[in-house]
Amino acid sequence: MRRIDKYEAPDKLLDGRVILISGVTEGIGRALAVKCAALGATTVLLGRNVPRLENLHDEITEAGGSRPGIFPFNLETTEWTEYEKITEVLSKEYGRLDGLVHCGGTLGELSPIEHYDPYLWYRVLQVNLNAPFLLTRASMPLLRKSKDSSVVFVSSTVGRKGRAHWGAYSVSKFAIEGLAQVLADETENIPIRVNTVNPGATSTNLRRAAFPAEDPGKSARPDEVLAPFLYFLGPDSRGVSNLSVDCQP
Ligand SMILES: NC(=O)c1ccc[n+]([C@@H]2O[C@H](COP(=O)([O-])OP(=O)(O)OC[C@H]3O[C@@H](n4cnc5c(N)ncnc54)[C@H](OP(=O)(O)O)[C@@H]3O)[C@@H](O)[C@H]2O)c1
Image (tube, rainbow, N blue to C red):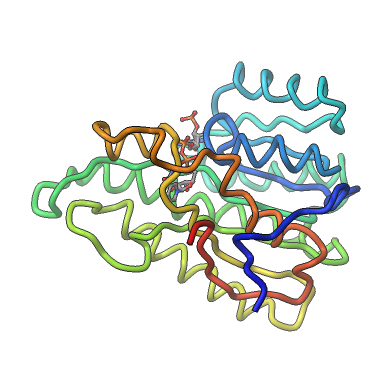
C-alpha cells in the first residue's frame, strides 16, 4: 500500500484550488499555508494575530503565490453565529472551498484530571473541538460547491490512546477523530472527503509548551510533516475518505 507519509506532491498539485487553513500564524499551519500556496492554491488564512497574518500574506505573495485571503478570527471567543460570516465572505470572493484544514490548536495545561482547571478545560475544548465543528459546519455549503473537496482534521497520538496529564487536549483529539468519522460517514455519497492526520512530534510552540526540556532538534520541523496534508488536499486522494493517518513513522 502507498505510504501517505512519504507522498511527494507534484508541482502545481493544488493549482486553482481554494484552501482555508486555521491556525496559520505559527507552526504546522503556517508551514502548510506556505507550501499550499507554492503548489498553486489560493489560501485563506485564518488566525487571531493580525500582524502575523499580514506577514504570512506578504511572504506568500512575495514568493509568487496567489494573493491569499486573510481572516482574523479567534477560535476561542468567537460566537457560533459569527461563523456564518466566513461563509458569506468566501462565497462572494471565491464561490466555493476545495479544502479546509484545521491546524488551530492549543495545549491547555498538563495536569491530572483531579486538578484540571475547569475553565481551562472549556477553553481547550472550545479551540480544539467546538471551533473545528463550527468552522466545518459553516463551510459545508462552500465545500459542496467544489467538484471534489477535502476536509482535514488534526489529531494527536494522545487522541488515540489516553495518556496521564494530557487532560482536555487528549480528550479534544479523541473527539476530533470521532467528528471526522461521523462527517466522513455522512459525506460517503458526495464528493467531499474527510480525513484525520496526526503530525507526530513536531518542533512548534505547542510542542515546546508540552516538553520544555526537550531538545527541539529532536522533533520534525513543521515543513517535514506536510506530506499527508498535501495528499489529502490534492486530486490524488479523490475518493479516499475516513482515514486517520500518521505524518511520521
Ligand atoms: N507540534 C506537535 O508535536 C503536534 C503533535 C500532534 C498534533 N499537533 C496538532 O497540530 C496542530 C498545530 O499545532 P502546532 O504544533 O503547529 O502548534 P502551534 O505552533 O502552537 O500553532 C497553533 C496555531 O493555532 C493557533 N491558535 C491557538 N489558539 C487560537 C485561537 N484561540 N484562535 C485562533 N488561532 C489559535 C495559534 O495562533 P497564535 O499564534 O495566535 O497562538 C497557532 O497559529 C494542533 O492541532 C496540534 O494539536 C501538534
